[in-house]
Amino acid sequence: MKRSEINQILQNAKAFMEERKFHLPLWAYWGIDDWRQNKDCATEVINNMLGWDITDFGSGDFYSRGLFLFTLRNGKYKADQKPYAEKIMIVEENQETPMHFHRSKMEDIINRGGGNLVIELFNSNPDASFTGTPVILKIDGLKRTVQPGGSVVLQPGESICLEQGVYHRFYGEAGKGKVLVGEVSMVNDDASDNCFHELVGRFPDIEEDEVPVHLLGADYAKFSI
Image (cartoon, rainbow, N blue to C red):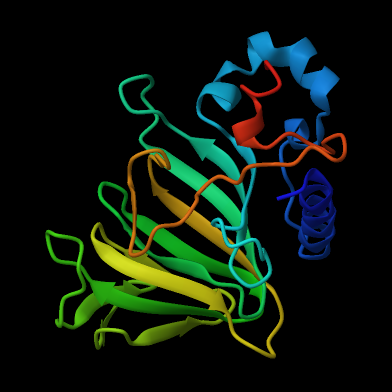
């Protein structure tokens, strides 16, 4: 991805969150110099990769297959005592996050407003293949059974609990508008806990054609923060 594209996605995301009245921590708006001046007090943010996160999953087409995320809080295994994480995401209409599950993380995915979020589901076998068994889950604490490959549609205010090993693929429902999506979960570890059904690139290679508006979590080491 080009940095100019990432910068534009960031600007669009800030405008949408302002429209939905979702507020980010003050350090979300720091520039490179701010990070360098404050890095000694921001070790948790840097070490746990909090902050902006944009990926096209290696597709080269962010708006078809991609995701905007901001990690608000996150623990780190064997490094601190925080056992939970929280993210805010923006999902465009028909913008796919590919089929994947988590080995260790259990999570709630919450429609925080905007359009509808479609989530397709499969159970997984130990070899990471799909099973032919129904997926038993809970929507806002209410039990639901979904046939393999079936989907649920979360309207604003609704949430789904996804247990470990449950494959999920999601996108915004066409004609309903972009979706502000929350995630509350156990500690998030993108380096080792994600199992995608097909090979994808989680963090993009970035062509630096502009100065970053804000650093991504994956940029901290790159810019010696």
